[in-house]
Figure 1 (tube, helix red, strand yellow):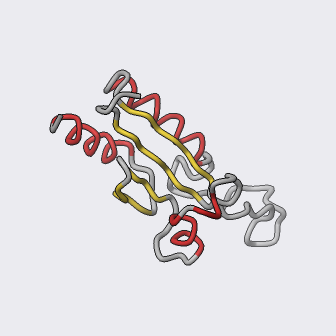
Figure 2: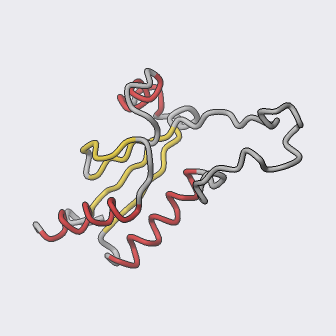
Length: 122
């Protein structure tokens, strides 16, 4: 990794998935379907897609990491773990070059814009 590499870290504390539908039907139909097409896609998978998108836009200039603070061995020592557990900010927390930039959603377009601004400064 070179000094000009932008580091994007996604910190997550995923809630356990409910196995039954809210109406008590055991989830056999989708009347609780979310409007968000990515609602059923794990943040870890979304992070991998983000990494591919950013690498396509900025080849070799961006590194993306996904950290589940609940299962990662570094979790207990990370300040982001306490932020997520206290619910001070909603998951995920997106840090770019060590700075907290976004919370509550993974929005590739906004992250891409931030990375582009950082790379333009170098």
